[in-house]
Image 1 (cartoon, rainbow, N blue to C red):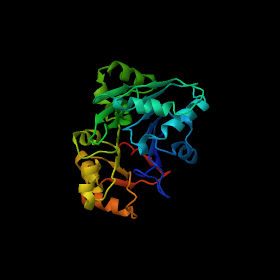
Image 2: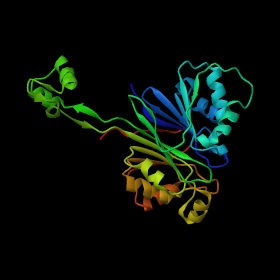
Image 3: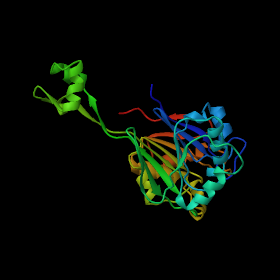
Image 4: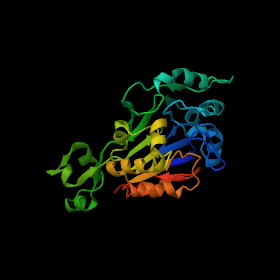
Length: 301
């Protein structure tokens, strides 16, 4: 059975708290696992969440501030210790190559795994697979930062009642899918387009074109909301979003499920983030993330 969900490993910004670990998010997409922004302590959070090194197929780092990347050393060494047999690819800003290399070889260990380095240098597709296209967009932060977007190809949904009306069944269903028509009946007459699902991961950034492009039409958007709206100037100065800004982005983009995360330790009431996102006009499903929760990609409409 295919699973599409985000496993939240950490939700703090800059420093961990008693309740929140540094960042870390695993996207399970059918049989693949994409680990985003492994901050310090990610390896232990994986253990607590029931995530194994063998679950990882890609690692995506938005930028090289410590709360988004210090866990790389431990995760990479665990991948090697567990001798993961499949290929793992790491994406990260090309300008941070020296940081990636320092983290990858922070201490001595035996390399047993094929870890492919695929740095990001510009907007556009990073990987195209039968299950999804992984894209990157530049964000606005004091250091170079990229957000990531996963788009499933559009497909077709066969309509049983129309198939039955035309007497198409058994092997003939596969035949009309392959050939586009059967006995004068076109594929369009017995099926409809099925829009591919979309996921985006947006971390440390001010409002910019990249934020809106990443969020556009997403079924599930994981986005930073470091500050509350009353601290909007502080957010802008440090290259971050407020909860209201995140809510407005999601509303304008038609997001179905919004996940707020990356919270400053200065705030003690998580409900305030949800309230401000709602006040900004977001009416879809809304989650204020906490460590070790799982958030499912919404079912298709």
